[in-house]
Image (tube, rainbow, N blue to C red; front, side, top):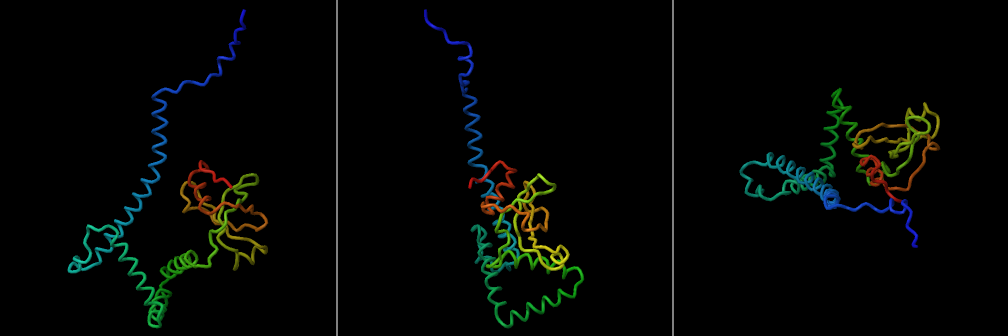
Length: 217
């Protein structure tokens, strides 16, 4: 007489994968592989096309022979060359005089001067070679005790804010999900931060994905 296996032994057999199940899994895998690349290339193509059209609209018709429309990216190259040329001109004495005169004119306009000063300061901070803005990812206890959010250190708190707070604080940008270009600016005591070793790029991926992509240390 042979022993028969208990009924429980047959209940844990893995379910059979149907053909439709395999096709569905392959479909999802294909989307995960192609969708990010397709969106990236489409965004880059749209940006290049937009720049090309903007640059071509500024070129007189008699010079169209030097800028054939069938070459994509030519407008981007022309824009880069123009920016380099402007940078070279402004590096000289005459260029610096023109820039100072232009900024002096803008400083006399009530609303324009505030917008121009803010935008210029942002670009100077982001493009400065020695800038440490958005170089560190931290955890901040926000919006209440026991809850933590991901933040990016953008600098050391100074000026009137530092005087009023009376302690060593840092400027922390708290991005929103899934759009990290919007968020909140917090002035957080340095001792209240929990620094992370992940890169800013990994931190942005974590925010954009809503926690679906978790970088490994």
